Length: 219
Ligand SMILES: [Zn+2]
Image 1: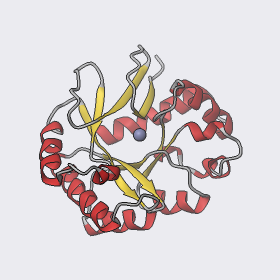
Image 2 (image 1 turned 180 degrees about the vertical axis):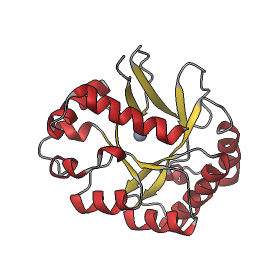
Image 3 (image 1 turned 45 degrees about the vertical axis):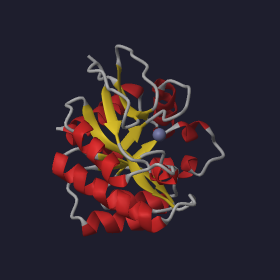
Image 4 (image 1 turned 60 degrees about the horizontal axis):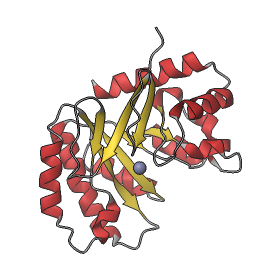
């Protein structure tokens, strides 16, 4: 039997037989038992006037106890966002601590912040796997992140030949690859097909390899 497709990061539930998806929820959204989820505090949350960091972190800690919550995410750093980078870093560091304590891997939002993310991984001696989601960087970014054991998840941008990910995609080691739909209204199967084509491997092989990555990090 072929392994399932895996959509490692999405915001919409699409129940289907041959699909495993990690649905990203807001802290106050309930998570039914029939799928898998991630809860995290996005750096953009700092923008909300009523945001209370300690309260949000307590709620997150509670949510991470649920067995169907497989990941902490998305959390991260965003240099293109107007919120203080210092506050973003503080929020991320608290979540790194939670990820390690609860033994849940992280799904990261990383906008022009590779160096800082790598430095935090070292500083916290983090052992949990980290996945940079929506990856669209250069060959050099691929090497830098995978070189430090960070997984990369690529989404809808793969369908646009003019994007730089088209050139760098083939440099992603298959042992560190995930695919995702994020906000896109398409099925992850479409992204798998394009990816298999670009990598010049068949679809069952790609599914097997990504499934193996998933099994490795959620054990
Ligand atoms: Zn997302």
